[in-house]
Amino acid sequence: MAQPLAERLRPRTLDEYIGQEHLVGEGAVLRRMIDAGRISSFILWGPPGVGKTTLAQIIAHRLAMPFYTLSAVTSGVKDVREVIEKAQKGRFFNEASPILFIDEIHRFSKSQQDSLLGAVEKGVVTLIGATTENPSFEVIRPLLSRCQLYVLKSLEKADLLRLLRRAVTEDVILKEKHVELKETGALLRYSGGDARKLLNILELVVESGDTVITDETVSRRLQQNPLAYDKDGEMHYDIISAFIKSIRGSDPDAALYWLARMIEGGEDPKFIARRLVISASEDIGLANPNALLLANAAFDAVNKIGWPEGRIPLAEATVYLATSPKSNSAYLGIDAALELVRRTGNQPVPLPLRNAPTQLMKELGYHDGYKYPHDYPGHFTEQQYLPDGLVGQRLWHGQHSPAEEKLVERMVRYWGERYKS
Image 1 (spheres, rainbow, N blue to C red):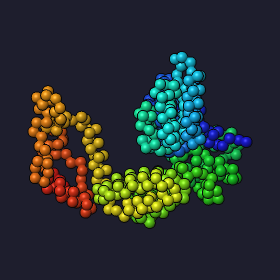
Image 2: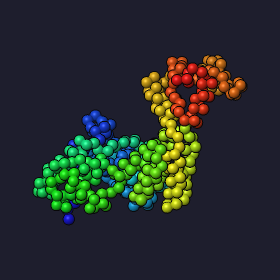
Image 3: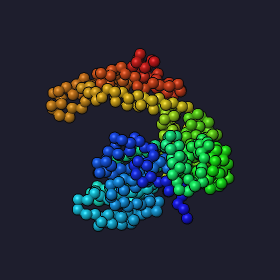
Image 4: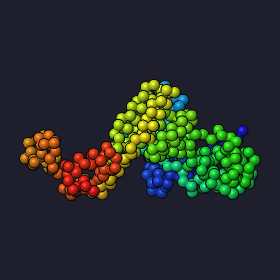
């Protein structure tokens, strides 16, 4: 039985690898490490089908290092310890550490991740983890601090077209069928930047007897085979995008519809809950600060009560966020502040704002002139809090919602002209 097309076309070298130029292109960070012959532990974070597993295999082959693989779905602590023991026994003095590749590392429990720590710390193995989820949520801090994090992107149109051309001209089976890529729009749309899904769809269409590829043939074959491609790529990212945009657009009916689509499709409830927390901060913000509290409570409730009852707090938070007034002033404010810091560097802290725990600091004027706001009427007195070079900078601009307008009014009472625009 022939291997699937995606497996037959799996790149074996960096020259065959498509996409992720920011990591493996000439002079890029991972390429430099590979060319130097030494790599440190790292985690690859990106959507499905963008080459995480392939990249790990290429690195191991290129550096001629032993390569061990574990899947977080099927492996337990015992499996981790067995692999680490095998790596210790098989390693010669001064030889580079074997690579331990863990797919879907975000699914590892805390105890499984703890069992890796010692081996990674001591260099018994070089860990390469792959995840589709934000590692800061799913990977324990001690392990994350010992790994570099590299973000992989969905493949761009040019990458996908290059992959398609390679498939029809180089694959031993497709070459014999003389496949013609007359139209590629539907292939690209359904793949959602996922190379594996793209090749699976192409293979499905060709095996159904269509060797002239058009948008109509692709759409027809996929409608006839609704389960022919997984839900982790295009649908995963498109539907969560539609969900968040419906909340942002204050449409509770649409938000509930997309929530139901995710639930029915088997989406991880924690993934949905995390997005609700983000939306509460980014889109509702100071217009209704209770939104963040409710989203956080929904996250906790889902973790406590599980499925299927977890759908109820998720629905409650979804409707509350969608029907809340909206403001992104805090989101814009922190981005403006970060841009200012990057542009102006490390500005000195004004002396009155500095602590003076030692006599020397007191003699140098630390804390001198600081006014304690609680000693003044209304618990406020005007003084300088920004560095000397940034006095008068505005970063937060209040927006028009009843709750936020009250905050602006208070700032105008305190600071006058500074907050009037």
